[in-house]
Length: 93
Image (cartoon, rainbow, N blue to C red; front, side, top):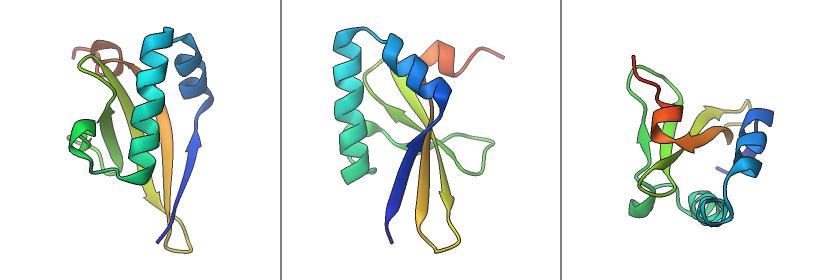
């Protein structure tokens, strides 16, 4: 099984607006995620109440939300949806 990666326009815009240090950390996390999504430092986990959405930790305050779906050829499609501080990504209810 192979994984294909893509990102939303919103993710791209949010990524570009990160400060340099956080952008570098995010790039490292994305590269690691693409190689090994279950690496412990990423703290990859399913978001409660969703079917296909997961969170990936960039650092202690920044998260990436991804959607993992199966393509018709049985491969995975990973979409990077949003990136931001925890309180931005998971607003209070």
